Length: 256
Image (cartoon, one colour):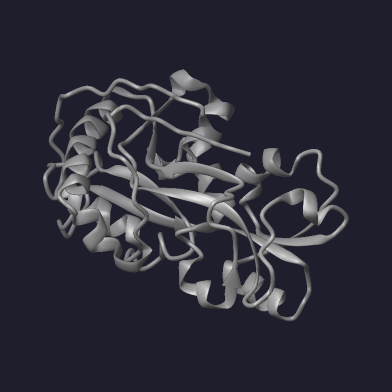
């Protein structure tokens, strides 16, 4: 398990309200990647609901901009966004530990191998050597290390829904997807819940600036409170995945 530790300030900077009709220049610019079920262009994804609830306890406003998965990370890396949903470990590796800070988790995610409903689940990549496997474009940011040293033909598509359809038409032997993202399609799939390919946490990930440290310090405290009071589970409904609250410091893990 990899662990990254970040210290958050307890200062709170004033900014415009999230619900204000005109956003202030000091609002946090937030890049939103397209993640099945969790983040949407309509701002009604599970993580957006959690963040918006937590923001009610702060005086900070955000401006959300929705992008395709890989484009969102590029926007953040180029400095055109202050923060981004998810990608904490990936961005720490790319930009350095001192350049990145992150919030209390919005949720936990785990990648698994999925096969068609009624078929025998496949728990390991070793059983798929020489075969084709489906995955979503952009998820290679997490999966490259998992797939390394395996002779697997990965077919990259635009969405989990497309992969489920291709799996049903036997275009490949299995698909890789993350829980909770894939849960709405689970009635069509089989998998080994005790054999994840990788586990980690989705957080709000930000450039390490004084303003962002102040923002995440207040936000993380509120997010932890909401999680411990059951608000996360209430907002996520059937997409909720339990995880231990732990400290406010960022922690991330992966397991191959």
